[in-house]
Structures are given as structure tokens and as C-alpha cells.
Length: 544
Image (tube, rainbow, N blue to C red; front, side):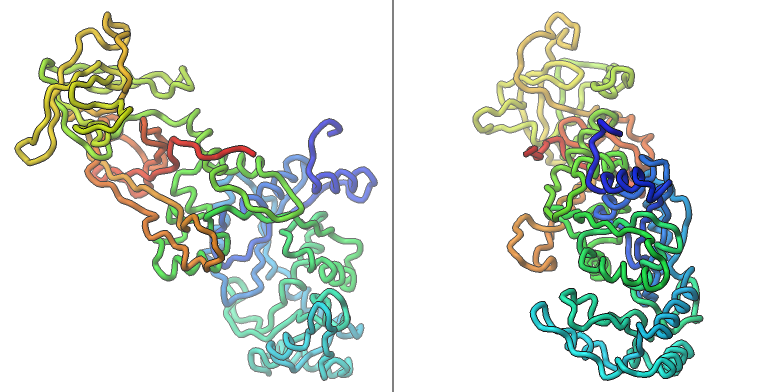
């Protein structure tokens, strides 16, 4: 790996391997099952599973299920589904709840060692007594209870003899520590809630800062990689593992979390959007959840590519969401099948053409091996309303009075007239220029515009779901709820697609020529063909 570029996490791992501290590398991805994974989690997934792959190590999936009031088996299943969809495989599926008994034993040992005590203060009182960054905290009146009394009270907590919030177990560290997290933190609380795995066996639950280092140590994790907000918690992480007998144990390393422009990256806010009906569920294509991106049509390989491009940093920053779209667009450009779809159809009649024929349309110009497919052509076709203008602005190169355009993959046509058909809709008449198909005698006649079209006699009706960001583009400090884009979804009905799309299947990708990239919606059926917009053709990403 001498000539290979490495990030700061890999540099630490390389050093640990070189000095013999570890002979193998074990990481973990530890989500709390209180919501669906979002794009921010994809960065952590790529880092942890990427290390597994690079160092031929292991990576566990471990659920941080220490707060049963917010957790549900629905989220457990969704997390597994999303990780697999992204292309990762864990070595062991584990749960913090697997170690509840062991954590309880460690808490008892801390009490016996005079390093933990049962406190009578309320959560509000504990918070008020912690002090500030410039003022030390105040010790709890319960801090000097005898070991025997603390052991009796802690057992009584487990036996359910106290109401929720009436007692907590706190680590006895230092109320004058410059790190507020070390000022006698709570490590257990009374909480009556049915756990999705242990049922009602427990009425006390460990806090994350206590459960996490113990879980890491038990599993033999070598490098516990987490986001930057846990940097101030690292001294507590080390205190727990050392005082519970795991020394040296795992090493915690922090990296900058992913922040995206115009994107909500908080499970609490995402859950609020679901509960208030702003979106249609956790997998709504507008959501930045991994399941939402799957339903939108983002390929997992493009998401992994995005995570690789943004890199691993030590300081927080905001990434332009256009980079993610750029990765998706770049991936689909090389792989998506081409098709013609007219969103807002206008009937066009070719006065000097009779009969019909089949034309060859390339499946993907980026990949000649993808071949071609047939598309029918007759004297009645549909073009998009945006491709005809009777009073065109300057530099309008589409169809207009006295104008000529090329039909994609077909002939050059010339405007004749326009008016209303028998139903009151716009109808345009043109003539076709003979031998103007590719390879014909008149194919090289210069016209400035090329437009897409579909044959009216074989076209199929489709519905198109168009999406925009959930947040407006003005980040002026307002709460997310005040920045919700009320026009983030638009449903286009009455669109016309080439006949080949009648056989489409859910999750198939296409480039609708001159429109953008689309995926067949999961809900699409033969009787109701529907597509979700993935990303437009125009790339707004500007590399720095």
C-alpha cells in the first residue's frame, strides 16, 4: 500500500498493523433502529465496509437497541434491506441487547469499585448541576452513598421498585472535568418499555455512552469509527472500557459527518415529515433515505461513487447535493436505455406521408454493443408542446411557422399550418422531406433543431412523477419546517411513450431523450405505467 493514497483513518490502521497492535481489522456499523437509514449513513457504511474489503477484515452490523421507546422491528428490517441494496454484506448481525446482562454485571462491578452510584436527582436537576464550560459542576448529594446501599438500590432498580426517572446510576468520575461528558454521566436509567427483542425482561436500560464501548470490546472491534459529534465523548468511551476491564480495547476514531445542501439529515425531522404527511412514507422518492433514493431510481453504485469522491475528512463541511446528482447522471448516462416520451403531447400530422414503417433507435450511444430497438412511424405523431411555438422568441430552434426540424431518428419535417382538432386541441400540419432519414440523399440538409416524438398510432399512456428538493434553496437559519418546498412533487398525466415501454418492469432505468433520466416506479403496472424522475439531463455541478 506504499504508493496508494490513504485517508487519515487508514493511516491509523496501517500504523496499528505495522507495530503489531492488531493482526486483523474488525469494524462495525452500529445504527439505532429508530428510523430508516439516510444518505448520511451511506458514508459511514462505505467507510466501515470499505475498510473490511481493503484489509480483508470483518465488519459487523450491530443495532444500538438501548432505547425501546423509539425502536421498532420495522426499522431493523429496513436497515438490513438498505445495507444489502447498497452492496454490503456484514459478517455478524448483533445487538447491544445481546449484552444487557454483561453490561449489568459491569455496572455492579463499578459500584463495588466505588466508581458508580445511584442518584436520586431528576434529569432536569442533573442537567442543571453539570455546570458550564467555564464553571465546574456540583456534586450530587447521593454521590457518597455507601457501596452496600448503592448495590441494594441498583438491584431494586432492576427489580422495578422505582418509577421511571426516579433513580439513575451515574459513573463517579470528576464534576470539575473540563469535559462536561465526564461529570458523573448517567449510565443507567429506569425505563418501562417493551423491547422489540427482550420484551419486558428489563425495566432499566444502559445509556449509549456505556453500552457502546462495552459492545465494541466484547465483539473484538479494533477501530470504532464514528462521526465527529462523538469526539468529546471519546474520554468517556475510554474510561468505560478501561474501568470495565477492556484495556487497551477498541480505538475510537471520529470523521466528519455528511452534510448536503437542501437536504434534511436528521432522523427526527425525517420522521416528522412522515408523521405529518408531508411525504408518503420513509421510502418517498423525495426523501434522502436510502430506501427513498432506491424508489427514486438512484443506483447503489452511484451512491458509493459519491461517497468515495467526497472523501474522509476531520472537519465538518457541506457538500453540494449537485455532486450526488452528477454521480447518478454519470452512471446512468453509460447504462440507461434510451426511449422517447412526450410529456405534454401535441398532435402533428404529416400531410404527404401515408402508411407506416419501423425505424431503428439506438439503445445507448455510449455503448454501441447495446444495439438498437424498433420504433414505429406513421403520418400522425405526437411532439411536446414545448417544441412548437407560433410566436417564437429569438434563437428558438424548434418547430415554428415556416420552420424545419429533424425528428430524432427519422425525417426532416417542414411546417405547413396549425389549428384546433375536433376536440379543441392543438394540431400541427407538416410535410416530410423525402430521403431525409440518416443515409438518405437529403439527410445532410442543415436544420438547427432536432426534436423527439412518438407515433400516435402505437403510443402508450404513461404517468410521470417529477420531483424537486424537499427544502427551498434559501438557507437563512429558518427551521426545516419553514423551508419545506410545497411544490416538491408534480404528477404528469396524459404523457405518451413509445410502444416499447409498454413492456417495462419496475426499477428499469431509461433516459427519456431530451428530458432526463427516469425509472419505472415500483407501483407501475401494465394498466397504469408510471415512471419516477431520477435526475435531469442538465448538470449543475461545478467542481471546485
